[in-house]
Image 1 (cartoon, rainbow, N blue to C red):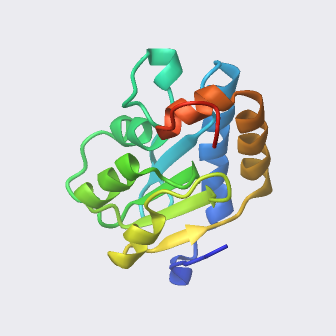
Image 2 (image 1 turned 45 degrees about the vertical axis):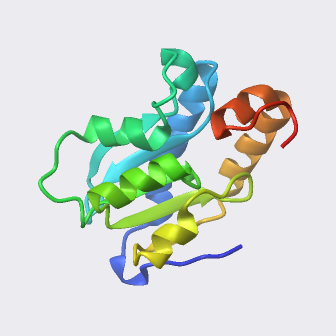
Length: 161
């Protein structure tokens, strides 16, 4: 497990993750994929929160991070914002983080999936992996119970992971 962090922030990152986790639980209750995210200002103020709603909206572009990003509305500068997500961001969401210069990423867990987190770190974006057991359990149970839906979400054809 790799873990990189901007330790000088002084913000309780697990508290920020609670918001993303609640969104993931809502998504699961709605019959969707349990991935939640939230965008915060540098001082921990919530700007927007969201969840993967690909199933609920029949829209493949509504990932947790994109939903949170949209909910935050326009910002003049994203460099001091923090994207918090229950699962390592896929390449699509990593591209969003890069494109808009989001300043830091906090990941609940990356055991179930690893996307562009190393690429983001190589670009100089601080990445923190919390390895949160709630997130690990939620995703592993979901993947076991709905492998086809999970594979659809990560772009894998068939039930093999």
